[in-house]
Amino acid sequence: MSGQEFQERARVLAFAGVDSGGGAGISADMLTISDHGAWGLLCPTALTAQSLSAVAGVSPVGDDFFSLTLRTVREGFPGIAAIKVGLVTEASHLELILDALERDFPGVPVVWDPVLNATAGRLESADLKSALPRILRASAIFTPNLPEALELLGEDPRGTGRADPRELARAFLGMGARCVIIKGGHVDGADLATDTFASAGLTFTMSSPKPNAEGAHGGGCALSSALAALLAQGYAPHDAAVLAKAYVTQGILEADVHGGRRPPLAHHGMVRSIDFLPAIEEEGFPHGLGRDFPACPPRLGLYPVLPDCGLLEAALRGGARTAQLRLKDASDPRLPGEVARAVALGKEYRAHVFIDDHYDLAIKAGAYGVHLGMEDLREADLGAILRAGLRLGVSTHGAYELCKALALRPSYIALGHIFPTTTKVMPSKPQGLARLAHEVRMIAGRFPTVAIGGIDRGILPRVVETGVGSVAVVRAVTQAADPVAATRDLLSLCTAIEGD
Image (cartoon, rainbow, N blue to C red; front, top):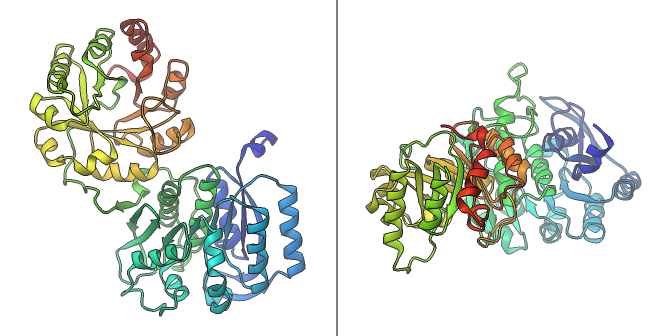
């Protein structure tokens, strides 16, 4: 790694124990943080003598040396972008960590994994409970497993089968937490490992196959440190949650079994395939209909998104073979006629013309397809679209919405917004090219992909280089003095994704 690469990596500080077996604690944290493109800094809380089958001993780090380590890391590596807190065995360490978070790291996102495992050493419950309000206020994401959540809330930790994780999460939110993930992998007899995410505005579950009852050694450490690494790089908590969950699932499924014992989690880089992404359940959001929507060409090429049929026809005359009519005003009396004309233009030019939002008019006019955003999907009659044989394109804004889109098995998935855009108010931050490339690699030809949001002529070639199958443009055509010529020019930059 060059000095520049080191300087460019986000820095993540981990408080955790040292596992002599290398599978959990700081060893797992450092591997996970590196896998997610960040740089790990460590402040050990304890040394543990352990193997895959037993913990032989735990020796806390002395307070003076713990304080020295923390001060040296803080002063020697300014600009720490996220913090993970794992195993804490001493009340004195807990106080030092909380004081440091409140005094030295205001605004830095903290992922707190409240390790309550008697075999690895632990704080007394009373110490953790008394500090819980401060812990929750300091944490961007709090990640207890189900028994830990029950114990921290004063309930019997053996009652996992009767507990409602959503109620537990709401209890933590009521105590000051900003975001909680209740890990459900400890539920006996379940075929799925189901975690519950909750924040002030969003609650959902994430479920992944549970190939064995034990999971893998270091899974909880990896989840929290993956969350911290992703938060350090600007991911929203819900996007970080599904990617961290997928990373652990990938690591469990690819772990090497050691003599039938619980294996250490495999660390093979950031999640590589949509096969590892969790199934999402969010109240009010539709589930899949049991079969795929009709297929699109795997590469849709240049994809102008246009506000009227005059510009649509200009783009088609310029050679575009995929386009979208986006008319947002449902009260516009011209709407039915414009949709009908757009469909006719698509047939005339033998192009794939999608209608944004107005699926009922698109069905009536016999459109090639419709494009719907996440909120539109809540209200749309997806069954009617499928029965009519229309293609369905779905907008996503990050990994969480990608999971929701995949469950619908659409005709294509739009990935955005890539750059800042002035054409509409966006609820999320721009993703950029690196995240676009990662999502394209995860999807890997399973669905056609479209990059959308703030893409102009200057950046278009770099977007094409990510491997995405289509590039949506708006202002590059709508604001051009000659939309026909502009479309031809843009097509000349898209030769790698044209021709299907």
